[in-house]
Image 1 (cartoon, helix red, strand yellow):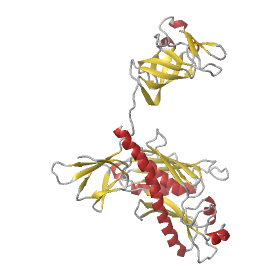
Image 2: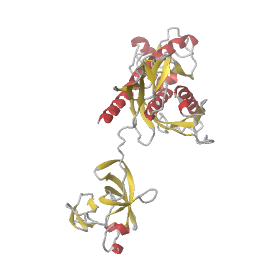
Image 3: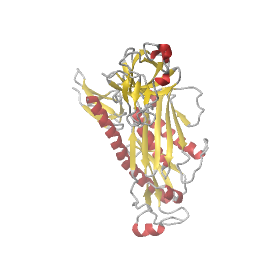
Length: 259
Length: 190
């Protein structure tokens, strides 16, 4: 059953006190690890992700082993994504196997998204490896991973067409409850994600071009449009936040250059 | 002419009719965009038609000094064995290193005289700060250091009780709290 029908119906406030179109707190840092070519740390609510980027490095043929999913573009550039989920990241301590299907799908989704927006033709036959460590999960895992990867790739200085930013959107009513007056919700937390249908949408920067769209739950087709609209709108807000992070980093770069 | 400002990926930089794309930019629907985050510079061409926009993301403050032979370094002792002391080089000359380098003080390089009576554990302890001189670039992983001079040796040390000690002679530090003396290869104070 929808977890918050009673309270939501009355005050239009969700479990954590947000309104339908409010994002959770997003905090991010860039260049967190000196040893990596690019790195970032991102928090979306209580979801916490570390991302490191290695590359572009010389591609190693037949080095497909070692986990992770990779996409090879037309120029022969390999974009590889490896996600590791910390055992302590969830509510109950659960070890995800290496070949976990959900993890594998996230890896493939992220690899595909960045293979299309990165200018891989500038680095033929090389590999770009994105490593994601999930420290804490509370909803919007894929979105957090995509946003963290974007920041780390910018830090690594890999040319790209635009930011790929992502967030989730859901609907207040489950599939079974044939509720006509279901509202769309922005950025579901972990509890909401378990109860309600939701999708993850990723767009290219300020444009409304959708580059990632993943939906794992069932939802009535009539609600999809409003969910998508809210999600795309949320992506714009996320973009503003990531922008500020990159700009504050860039400001430091300018100051250092002058000094 | 050259102006400096910050550009981030996807940021519009102007129409293609006014600017030419340089490194770090791309063209989409006759509009120039940034493809990396970095410092944007516009350089006008001599022929006077269109200026070129380039973006460079210079690595931040890459003032990485490297140890060279004869350089005086400050290092922290990380590990001792009867034959050598392993140190982490923190400061080279006047400049602080961005990341530490591993160095090695072999037992025969600790002091200039009576080399065969030197015992590493009577000269250094892990945690000591040592002033030393680079004598060789060493092997793959270590710089070889020497403290064979009066002015070289331990300059800061903590006792086994954990107190900062003061030097009392060329081979002894003293704990001001417990009064315990500990042997070290002491650097001559200036």
